[in-house]
Image (cartoon, rainbow, N blue to C red; front, side, top):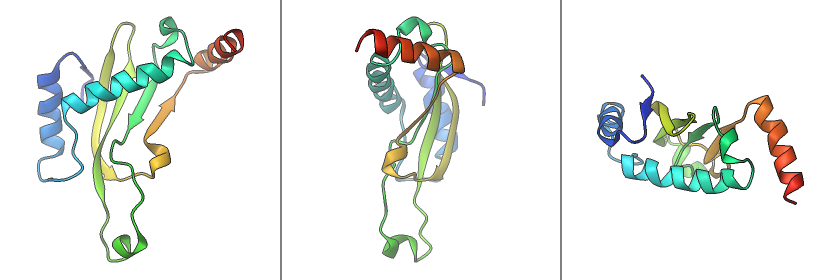
Length: 129
């Protein structure tokens, strides 16, 4: 899929409709993605100055949860809609939307920083400690 600016809710919902064509549970909608971006930005503000966010990638599974063995041992594999957000110079982009096996709650967000961002993060946290 082509990356879609998060300001284009109609295009994001159209892509979600394609991916979620035959699903009825653990789905995502544009409103939820916009909400998650707000939460991600709140967390990033504690780690990095905003001018260093470009290139940050966040994989999101809003339905990450642990299922009992009784559920999964009977061949039931819970799937959810997962998406990847990438920060551009001024806004966020959705770069990937898939259906996949629900991750554990600890993997609700999976964040990838560049090496430069990691260094800036250490400097930023130590300066503001």
